[in-house]
Image (cartoon, rainbow, N blue to C red; front, side):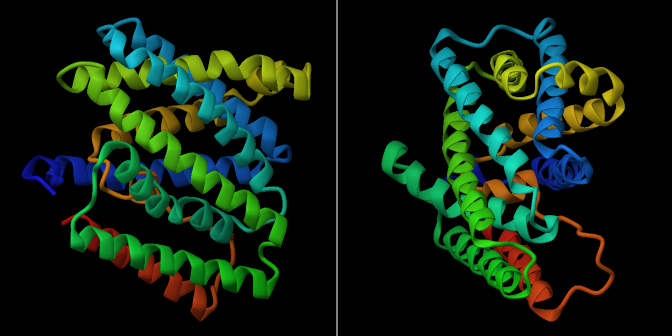
Length: 278
């Protein structure tokens, strides 16, 4: 890994802050009665914030436009799968499974398409991270906190996360020099995601979308701002940092005494994050 790819203290703080924000909006979706509609409301409010930011930011370079379109398309799939994921699984199992397997897939895609490979310490971190979340997944299956169809959805969304991680990393680089252009890329991508997702969710939920968007605006705004901020932070971090550490992992199911195997899985995931930042 080159020196430029090492995390600065500022980016590290942003990574940890993004973890909290991402866990926040996923918790909001999980607590809603209609998970799909709730995830859509978060996406729409994220788009509102992104559109407002795009008005005052520089325009991303033309070379970044295909990546913005691709990012919007893949994020629609992501939000649809998030809405499906939380129907029947504990957040503390489904969330780490969805996020924790993505770094391995991201590393493979980045190596195959861009020729980028993490260093040995980062590779070890990814391996420990994946081992940790797989431990949690096996425990979840054994104790009924997640079923096999939901586990498949979690793993499918891991692949989606890996794809948009590579797309966004390259797109933000091509958008222009400096943080303002990376922020602009994020704003355009999130605004386009909301615009393209609106007819999809209207087809699926009809008038309930307008009701949820207006009546549940506080939840949507908080979740949307959290998603918008963490997307910006995640796209500024080096791609060799696991996406799970950028977007968070620590879900909470409301149980007071998690069993030992869940603690082991969580501990392995934390150690992986530390190791991967070399």
